[in-house]
Length: 131
Image 1 (cartoon, rainbow, N blue to C red):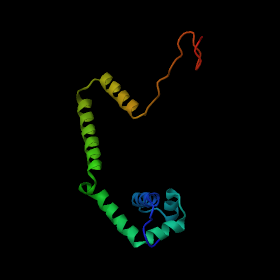
Image 2: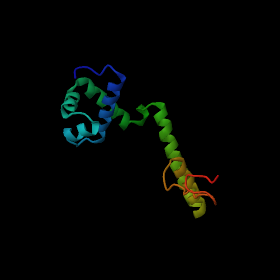
Image 3: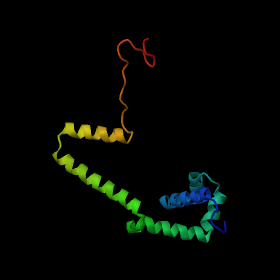
Image 4: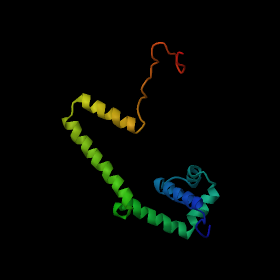
């Protein structure tokens, strides 16, 4: 690969590969290629490309220096930290019942946790209403 991909899809695949390489610095090329869903030859060609090394260096800076990240990412990080701080405050003052309700709401909004069991009404069977 002598030049970056010309298509948006190709560039997206390269950016994903860059993130996988950064997240797994000690993984073998075969493992990284499998995680990328590409061949080992493709990954090695990519790793040897000067433009990819430059992209990788920029991504390393963005990960290491939060001030280098785009504003939307900074806002998301700040919101997460503030939410964690608020949860810590609530845990100091809230009753166990209040914490349980708050966690149920949180898990429901994130689509996590146990799903509520819906029981059929009297006279109905599962999935079929009585006529």
